[in-house]
Image (tube, rainbow, N blue to C red; front, side):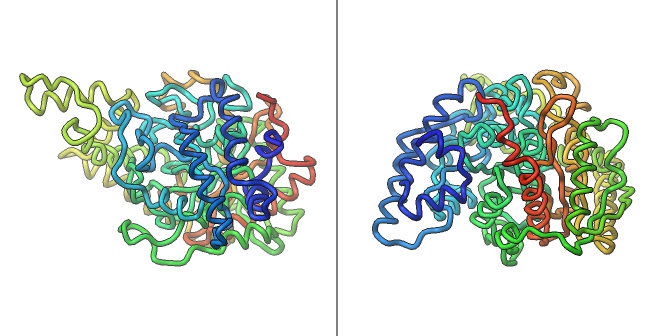
Length: 498
């Protein structure tokens, strides 16, 4: 029964629990058993507490037995990215500077998961402070891709993507600053969604780049992603950037899943040199599939998308240099060198030197330089102007089409360590995903097959206008349904057994 339970979707598990065919405790125990069996190989989690997990599950079962009305995902287990504050578990952002820190409050996303009755299995590994594309920049070591344990699971939400792909959890939370949900989803064969910026709350999310960070779901199906999206999204008065609008009808769109008459734009700038042939082959097949399903496909040019990567790597480090100033060894977390002989400045410098990893230090230095006197207008100011031009490219494109499509990533998962000493090669992993973060619009990655060269997953990215999140679910569900009919089941079923 345990082996059967972990392969079920979140929607199926919710149905079993609701009908009484399985209890929340049984479902939680099955996933805890799976974590115990494969975690030494996958290394997706930074914290798991089986007793606390089972206590949450028992509470759901007791509430259901008492006749309480519960949410559609009540009793379903979830892996929670270690960047959201949790009062009952450490929150470290996978950084030594926060090792063991227990926050005094829950993030809004955490609180809404609890209110919806989801059972939090534990916290997942990530690139430190969400800075990276491979989950190698973690104080706790790298996470491994369940498709090939020598490959990266994407980043920064790589622990979340690996947990879901390894059947350790049916659902996971992630955050997307430059592609950190969609890219790991693509390279592990999952669905990963970046909601419209402001559509999900950042309150209690340890900030990397405040104008970009967006919480979102990772799941094995489009419907599961939509159910989780709906559960934790919506206006939050605690977040000044939160949009005071209803959550778009994402679940209804995921159930509908049809594209007849929809106008689909293929982004001209995303393809060609630097793209793996197998990735492009699967992408073009997905475009042909959309056409066969009744969509009208046209090529669309977004000329300023080619400047998105350099603009992002000025804006994001600039914001991180400001946000990470709070980690100073004075208020919470690690403190080094406080022997009563050193000044506060010396203790601060020693703490940061030991507490931050190389990638975090690199981005703080880049951002501080870009914001410094004499360089602000030349670097940060220009990058913000490019950001405006990218948003205008999206506006112009969405006057012609309903959604845009592209590969999610230029390549499939690369070997652990291959790009560790080449930051520029690492940054290129987010080439296709960054524009949507800069503009703030909705974007999703859905599996579209395996590359011929290495039999690793390829993702199809679908982008829609601001607050048209339901549109990407509608298209994603249509693609998923058609491809699963062709494959005879989900793509993840083709993954090697761990």
